[in-house]
Image 1: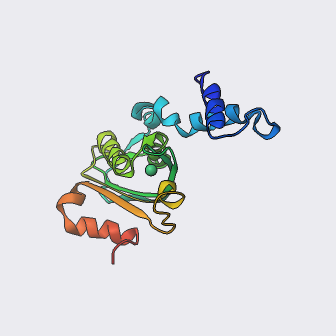
Image 2 (image 1 turned 30 degrees about the horizontal axis):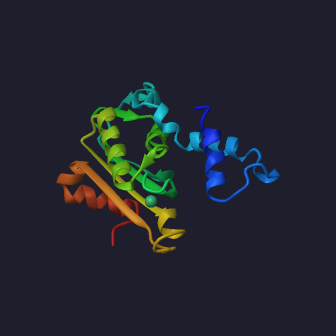
Image 3 (image 1 turned 60 degrees about the vertical axis):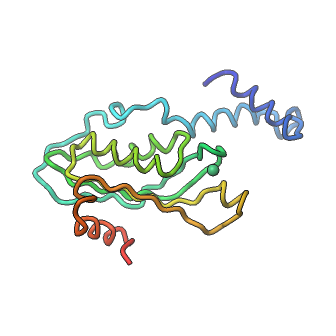
Length: 186
Ligand code: ZN
C-alpha cells in the first residue's frame, strides 16, 4: 500500500468536520486505505496473469454463456460504488477459456475506477483478444450509488450497457439467441 493513503484519509475525516482522534475513528484511516486498495486491486493485474494459460483446445463452436457474474466497481466521477451483474458470451474458434477466468476478467476491470460503458467494452475486448472468438457479447446491468444516494436520488434505476463484437454484431439471430438466453429479450 502507498503509505501516504492512511494520512490522506485522516485529512478527509478532518475536512468533513470529524475528529479523526475519537475512538471510533482511530483506526479508520488505516482500514479505509486498505479497503480502497482492495477495491482498486485491478490496477495490479494484467490479462496475461489473470488468464494464466487457462485456454483449452475445443472443437465446439457453440455459444458459451456465463450469466449473472456479480460485479462491484467504483465510478470514476464520484468514487462511489456501482454494483450489478455482467452477462458474457462468446463463440469459440478452437479455444475455450477456463470457466472461472471470465469472472476473473470481469473482476480485474471492475476493480479499477470506471464508467460502466468503458468497463463493458474492456471486458468484451479482453475476451476477444484472449480467445480469438468469432464473437463476444457483454451485457452489464448495474445500480449506481452516485445516482441513488445523491444527485437525482433515483433508487430504482438500473443502467444497462452492452457491447457486441463479431458474430453478435453481424447476426441478429445470434444476438437474439444470446439476449433470449439471458432473459433480456422482450
Ligand atoms: Zn458517479
